[in-house]
Length: 155
Image 1 (cartoon, rainbow, N blue to C red):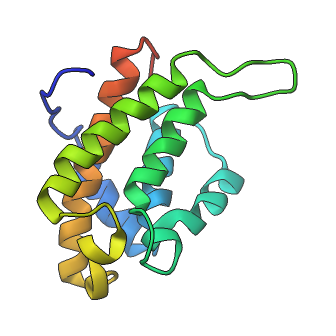
Image 2 (cartoon, rainbow, N blue to C red):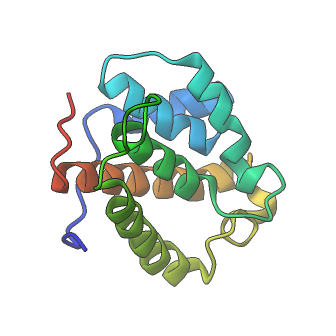
């Protein structure tokens, strides 16, 4: 497991998260958009595809979209891209580190990793956005910390 030290949010990221939330992107989509933007890339199909992960896979009953979106972010860097290519050997350890952190930090605070237990009926409300926004910043920072710890260079 990597260090427990949390990174500070990048400059301008809070404002960007607020802007994206205001455009009705969900938590998973925002994590992916931030990762793409950090690399100077666009991928509307990827952003669209992760929309199904937000809000606990849409029904609030499943794993928080921040966890699943962050897992997609790590896999975007380390996963299999084409037929002959193998995924990085670092992918599973990175996902394990993310899962361990999420369980310790988020489940430790909310007694669950399910959307309905974290934000519940507040999803989409200003109060829910406050909860989820803070968690999004922490999860995105942790994902970047994991990538850095495993030697993945980011722009």
